[in-house]
Image (cartoon, rainbow, N blue to C red; front, side, top):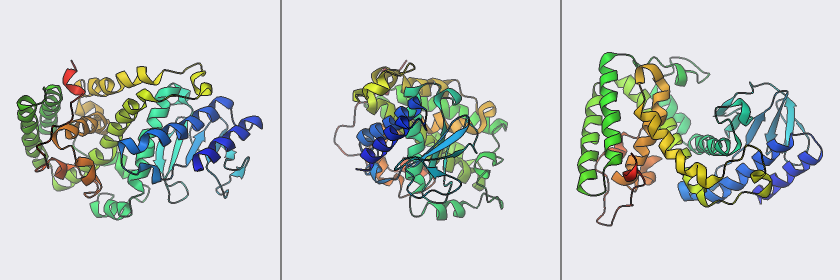
Length: 337
């Protein structure tokens, strides 16, 4: 019902010429797509609210918006607008007005997504942050990390002084990157089991050489941003059978979902192959953490059940995985070259 109301409201906004027509089509498609694929990726994801704030050149549009605040005014049943506050290149998820977190995003042309179909899939990444942030113990767990050094803005998550350029760190994560890619390329069976075991053992060694605080920070980033990128890839793949609305498919920058689904995983793994933690710094965690999620799909198929039991770290997901005698899922990655 909420999805239907949002789409009706966005259609009304187009009719009133308050929101650019293509933007309203894209936002409607996001809600339509997420409703169809999200629960197949994460159980009960559909229960997570998904407010979205679109940033255009001159204005911002918030939906759903039942009670205007923060300078917004209603333009339809569930859409509000205000003069632009955030930069048009914005792409983040945070509690703009307090809980729940809001996806704040610019138009495709102003973001790294560049065009409509990748933009929708990136919004699934941001929507996953809403799932993470909405956990009852999330903020308590963040505070328990004790990494903010008094910063109340949350910028410490981006600016924490992790030793990305230290030679030992560079060597360690370069080895891990290569072992991770080798494990993902291994055929199911003994080859994969051996390669995955080598990776897990080396992971413990490399992480064990980090300071306690650095370990907590990097593990948090893998849990939050790495698995969000993994979810982005899974969303692209889940969309391969999605039939878009005729309005979305008619957009000039539309890419068919089956075509994009074929390249999403490869793009992330190619990024990891070329990754240099000293140069990429925090950005390294996106492709690295996503690849770890892909490994967990094969190494510990039930890992998603434990993901939210161990907030802000994926370390325990690699310990003693519950591996049944049942045949593990065939890997899409075993044919990657």
